[in-house]
Length: 377
Image 1 (cartoon, one colour):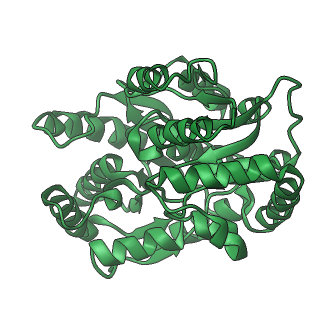
Image 2 (cartoon, one colour):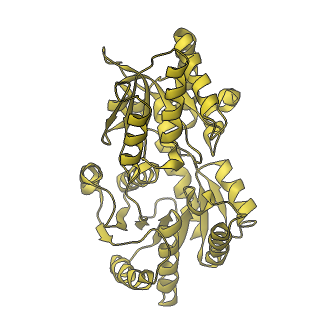
Image 3 (tube, one colour):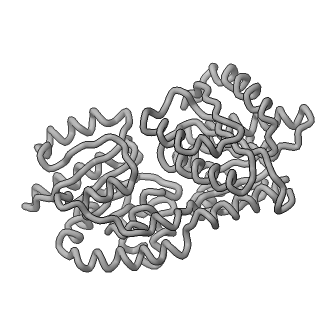
């Protein structure tokens, strides 16, 4: 691919939520603005009104449109019928690049790209895991199966893009030394996201924002809040996000007697949520390169986060301040420290904001992905 070649790019993924979805949207818009024709193919059974609004905001950039097909999260016999439907949809778009994201989207996209190659297309098959199957423990039966499948799919892959050094290392450890060309491309932010967010007068002490599933640690956040209250402190918090686990987390909050201290809210733009609290807590058990950490730091918010995935890469020389994953007591201690020294926490947040500004931009992300496409074609 020449530097100025105009491409037909299809992004194939399953779940239109979270950081993966933001990554795809940012990339699609930037690629369209560079003159490429871009389309999205993803699951029709996940996401809601909030995600629909996010897609509507970029629809005019998508010359190849949007195709939604039901995709199950787990491997199932229905995958064959789904793959046939996806093949017909994607073939009609005549892509030069199929960029597959996440484990399920990665499988569909690369298999379909290979079928197109058999029929004479020169389509490049690019894969970004975004954690996905790499979150599975290699010592479990499911982990072993998913990692072996990843190895088999390498034969259908022209380029691997990892969003963090951690993700690249996890792939090497769990799947094996990559055979396709590898590019590490961290997620990036827009310049406007580095403007500080004003704090609402009635702001809470802490904010959890993310998918309501154990992988993201909302249960750990609630337990840390319980511990702080048990130790005589009385912080307040907002929990923002949707997901199947939401009713369970609401029940945990009520059982812990924290119904007055913790309020739940549906998914909303991150910067709107940041205004609602003085500090952000990211208690994830696993991550690849989480946007929410980048967004919180860019907005100048003091942030407590766990030492998982690419988060230490974001914190760079300050990674020793991160919390061990799965440790509610350590999380509570870090939150208590922010309550005890708010001025110092704001100074640290400002230093991290400037560090993130110099290292994580959408422009750099898009340029690096374009380079990976050229290398694969």
